[in-house]
Amino acid sequence: MKKFVLIWLGELISGIGSGMTAFALSIYVYQAAGSVSLVSLISLAAFLPTILLSPLGGVLADRYDRRLLMVVGDLFSGLGLLYVLWNIHIGTESMIPIIAGVAFNAIFVALLEPSFRATITELLTKEEYARASGMVQIAGNARYLISPALAGVLLAVSDIRLILLLDICTFFVTIIAAMIVRKSIAKLLPKQKQGAFAEMKEGFSTLKENKGICALVALMAFVCFFVGFLQTLVSPMVLAVSDAKTVGILESVCAVGMLVGSVIIGILGIKKNYVRVLSLAGMSASVFMALSGISTNIFITGAGIFSFFLSLPFINTSADVLVRSNVPNEVQGRAWGIISLLSQAGTAAAYALSGVLADWVFEPLLCGQGLLAGSVGRLIGAGRGRGIGFMLVLSGMGMLPAAFAIGQNRAIRKLQESSQSMKEEKAS
Image 1 (cartoon, one colour):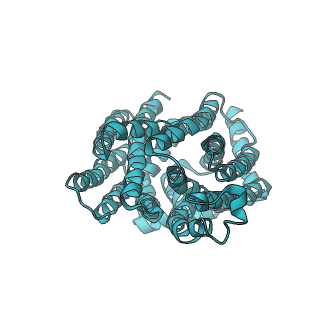
Image 2: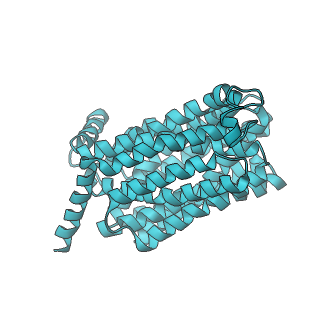
Image 3: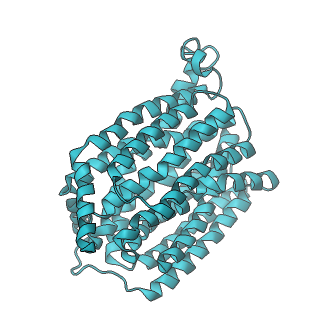
């Protein structure tokens, strides 16, 4: 567990830096261009290369030293941020270099995620998976808890260049942690090396043979589609009635919900009923997502987002344990790479569509003279940002049946039975 904690601390610090950059870039782009579409395009550039290359990252994670891949990924992803920093420093007006730098950063992040997830399996016992998953979510979601408020304060006294520089410096912490752990454990290599395509195909086959994992990944992709709308649209919606500092503070306060959920799981764990917890948490999150969009009142919006993030760790942990307990360690890297590609495809689709739908469809519908201003607008308000609010209400309503279906699917329930039987065999 000590080796895991060291890796985890590196990821925690790196996550805070990455979160500050993501927040600062969304504010920078929105204030410079005034376009939700460009904000979503930046999000897509940061996200799409990572999920598209995740299967390849998974193959590399199963073939080569996972800690070394984490080091390489951090080093080269930092070059992308340096390119963004340089273009902002010289005053480049075009957003194309910024998008290119963000995309380059994301390409090498694809090496990190499968290697990190596979390393967890390698370092821990099955009894520690749920607790470790809660800790991983604290690290991965520090960007929602600490980063927005910290970035908001820094933007008030400096500008985005300071934040980018700090983010680049955090990579060295992760690199040092990975190198220390690397010296103490042997790298895992497959018994027989095959071509990258053949190994990727083997990973697909491993998942395809398990109907429960296939069903879980498909439904999680549907859930991720609606979660992607929330991630993209909250900042522009709040900026319509507030400023960047308030947005940062609000996001951090709301993300305390995620911390509470993650800490509960990290301390107590989830010992059984993973499918039920996953389904109930998903349905709760869908209701809270809809709540976040129904009003221009910051407190109501904050309550919805706070409660949504409170539910999210239970969703992630339950899905994580169900998959991790049903996939052999020797193909964990490939499995997580492919799962990331398939499940996060929903998020990528949301990033691609959210800005266009907000700017060209829903915002015009709920502007002062919009077609829905006299109907829907009477319920949730009309004017700037209300079209985005309506999108969040619809997203919550769309996520609800998908979360319910997870708890009713027989193949997914069998994943829990398989996981429980493996624990009992080990205990005996």
